[in-house]
Amino acid sequence: MKKTVQFLNSLSRNNNRGWFEEHRDEYQEAKAEFEAFLFRLIPVVNSLDPSVGMPEVKDCTYRIYRDIRFSGDKTPYKQHMGAYIAKGGKNSAFAGYYFHVEPASDSFCSGGIYCPEKSILRALREEIDDSWEEFDRLVHDAGFSSRYQWFASRSLKTVPKGFSKDSPAREWLCHSDYCYFAPLSVDQLLSPGLMDLVAERFKGMVPLNTFFNRAINSIQTDSVSIL
Image (cartoon, rainbow, N blue to C red; front, side, top):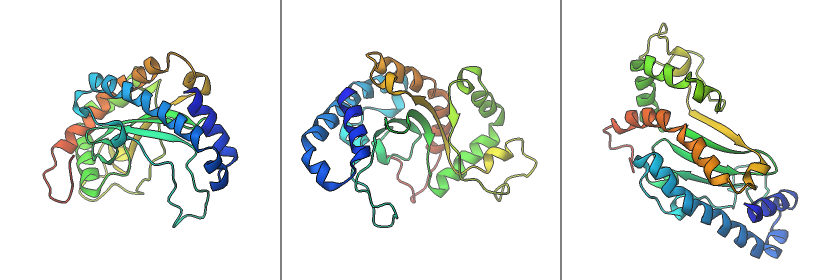
């Protein structure tokens, strides 16, 4: 990740179109390095969780250009590179595995599901409520809780309609996202053991992702495209 780290560090200090165009060759080299890493990572993730299949690199990665139409921040470029490895790639409705490189801020590996569509969120809440003991065991497993942190979730103030306010899962039922992560340092990004480290982080996410995807697989609706 040396070229990727170097380019993103420079971009964080020079986030403007003039500089970017002058250093486009460096961007292409960094992008190629990042994508080469993903090309090797995707089959590793598939070996850990065969449900993801073998999506192509281009279907898992995001454009570096920011959508600034409705943002007060008009800097034109993202200061990170990321990839979502899941069944169907980055547009998947399924819980998956996200790799984020942002050396000037926070790099991390994450899992779970972010901003799910309404019917999927309902299915996730029902699965948590119906299988509370299993979910509680997964999130409090020592191997999981010692390695991963939960992203702050948009939360309801009260238990959503249709669920008991006395449910032991009530705190989790109020969540609108279910995403967790493990940070990566710059030294780890530059380490020759990065692939093994990322694989180890993703391996620990498989049980909870499997739990979430069981709920998503149960959905039968025309309003959601399950890729």
